[in-house]
Amino acid sequence: MATEPRWDETLTSEAIPSRTIRFAGEPQCVTGARLAAEEFLGDLAERVPPASAEHWDDILLIVTELAANAVQYAPGPFALRLRRTFDGVHVTLRDTNPTPPAPRAFDPRSGGGGVGWHLVHALCDQVSVVTDDRGKDVHAFLPW
Image (cartoon, rainbow, N blue to C red):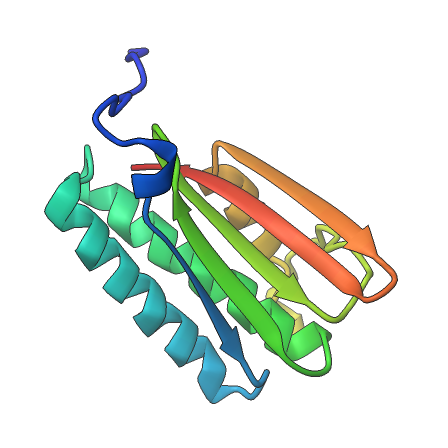
């Protein structure tokens, strides 16, 4: 069943919450990114509760997946930006690898992997990747 977007006309563009956090790119930074996202969502939920509890979980899963990919495939630091949109949450992860993610076939004999990029596309309303010579920005738009 299709529903209309939940436009929040009470928020001006200046009042739209956002948060940017920079990480060193170490494995423990994946947990740090997830915790930062959870804090952002907690603050956001006080203003505008999610339409479904699943939206909260989906956003945390996407942040975890993008941060894990940054640690695994991009040497060096990464930055996570979370921003409320009028009908959802925009997650941006900036890393130092200019190569766009590519879907891989899942092979359980290979020790895992190959599911993440498919998962990102399945849970997000829209996904885009913008590259430059210093790295890439992965943009994921999710419902709230």
